[in-house]
Amino acid sequence: MKQQKRYLEDVIKSLCFNTKNPKMAFIAGPRQAGKTTCAKHLLAERKNSYYHNWDDKTVRKIWAKDPKELLTKKKAPKPLIIFDEIHKAKGWKRTLKGLYDTLTFPQDIVVTGSTKLNTYRKSSDSLMGRYYYFRLHPFSLSELTNLNHILLPEQLTKKLLQTQAIPSTPKEIKTLEDLMTFGPFPEPYLAKSKQILQLWQMGRVDKVVNEELRDLSKLPELNQISLLVSLLPERVGNPISITTLRQDLEVAYTTIKRWLTYLEALYYHYEIKPYTHKINRSLKKEGKLYLWDWSEVENEGSRFENLIASHLFKYCDYLVDTGQSRAELRYVKTKEKKELDFVVLNHKKPFLAIEVKLHDESPSSNWKTLLPKLNLDFGIQVVKTPHIYQRHIFPWGTIYVMSAEKLLKFLA
Image (cartoon, rainbow, N blue to C red; front, side, top):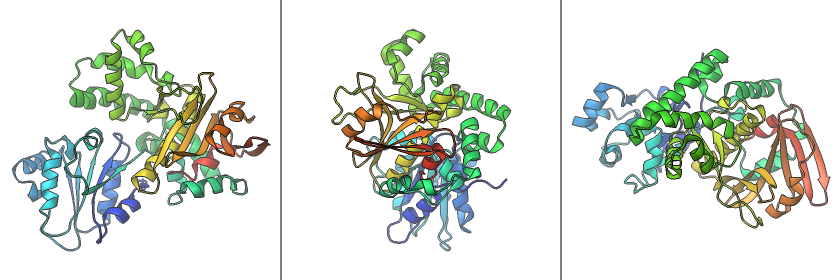
């Protein structure tokens, strides 16, 4: 089977592989999300290209003795060098900086990896100004059905209000059903086998906890962390209660917080923070929990909400990483339990509010209270049922109830 072209490939070529302002491309993301596949697609387009994986013993020896030997002396056509998982090397950024700063002729460089690419980026960065950083997410509806039609915020809002005239296709509906069942990661999605999905899930969790977490943190309590991981899927879509988790596992509050920080760095879960600006009595600290692999979530409503969250999260990361917007994903909840599931910000201002319902096509009562506070005149209520598009006009704003595929097809 021909492997799926990834949504970042053209962006990387445009932003990094140019003659006026070339940069190294750092591609980070979850294990098995497709980083290596993306890099190899880029390699396939170059005759003068080289792939180096840190797990190759020969690569490690050359890196230790004379890393310049991993470059090429052949100038034309312009070479492309891939360093895969090179972040596992001690002092890798310092070595890479030395290689890049002493290039005798132009060579495009791509670095792929997971945890430490992201972690080290937050500290003093010796490579600053020499690379662009891209977060590669797993599959989404748009990537699988509508590649190269990602809309910017202003275009997105206009299109959503006109989308009734654009019918949902059978391919979009079937793709969304498969994403709900098999999750977004390439291997189980492309296999479309529940047996393979279950084996893949067990293998992924084992690798995250017993390999990556062990190597990153040196924590001794891996068995207890495995128990923590088993508790998280049932908490999807809810504010993270460290106190409750601490009681369930009988460990200290700070211990649970540290474990969650590591698991987030390893792309097991992510957190969406509340939006509080001009929202009276809003919750200010509690972030909502979602998984990178929503197929682990048994409850259908929670899994559907996680799917929507991940599509919006991917869209925001794409806008930020490509320099097109300072997008952020938030949610709104008051102490009176009035809530909107998601608010997408553009340069810190709300431009899209979304409520998720599995099948309920009646506008939520929370819209009346919260939509005016966001200074928006319309909101989107997303349902799983296909072929739905309704407009409900109220004195305080308009609520569009629409099927998930009608929203997600225009995201990243």
